[in-house]
Length: 413
Ligand SMILES: Cc1ncc(COP(=O)(O)O)c(C=O)c1O
Image (cartoon, rainbow, N blue to C red; front, top):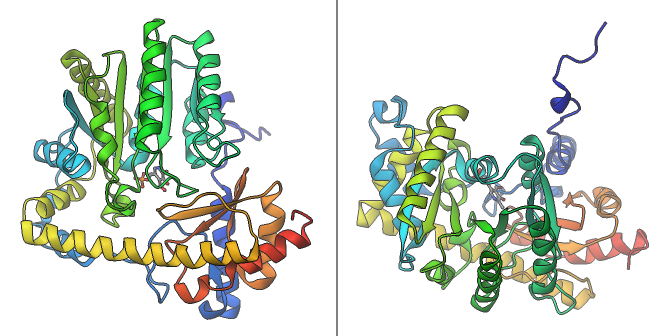
């Protein structure tokens, strides 16, 4: 009897990742001991102070106001034209870069990452991202027959490690003429770190130098958490004006967090190029891959963004509600950061966003030990991820000390 019917490249694939495992353990504890006792810091979604999933009321209002057929009809393969226009406004805000832009609707930010790997790298290629990264990046690469390569994100001074970024990209350039880089900023998952304007200048200068050597570079800028990154978070977009045509910037925009519409699966990939032909090619090849992957995208999600964007009063409500949660997440993180400092618990520099991280050589061991305190966090390769988006303030108090104690018990501090 054969035990596998999967093709060789598909054998052994399992989507049960660390996040899934930690979340199931938390659910089992909640079922046994009740919600009040358990600190579930695994969920990458906004939960309110009572631990309930948040849907921004303006989003609910907009979505429920849509005619049924606006939810059920097919959408054009590239996305609703009006959405493709408004999503760029929504993404760039007051900091739209100069040049040619083109948008294609995708299934969330994930779809944008999928398409970039598919259409801007060659099977067997490496794709570069930082050593702290959202684990799906690796799965997306592996599933497409590519390899994820990493650079050290932060140096000893806890600032962007340009030396290692350049080293790793140069090593890739020895083997590949077409390079793809994924940068998740601002409010990086899982650390809450954001590149500064100066970091961007240095990154872009280095890319320009590689272009001089005949390389073509696509930079996927994953801005999934941009609306929870505070004021000034969009300013870096203008740095994408006037780049050489061999540098293609693709912004992965997601409605999951900005609109709390995680399950509706809608986002966009937005290209910025100084070449009209490159922007047109981007629209063409990625629309084709839409058709060949999931045909077209969630029309209701797109219509919801358009509905909110084109109604100034509703747009104001949405922004205010969203920023209220941005402030709540900041308050939660501030409790942790203060207590971590007091307890002497090392952590990565958190600025904003849904997560913060603690470096650990064996994060699984620490997370396991924390289960006896009814604390559930996500063990990653480089450390422990704490979802500040979903832990109420009352449960945040005392958490840093518990992690410190578990790390000491594990012999890691
Ligand atoms: C860093 C990062 N990028 C992209 C995504 C993709 O989200 P979605 O596909 O729901 O838009 C997520 C979701 O957790 C994320 O954390």
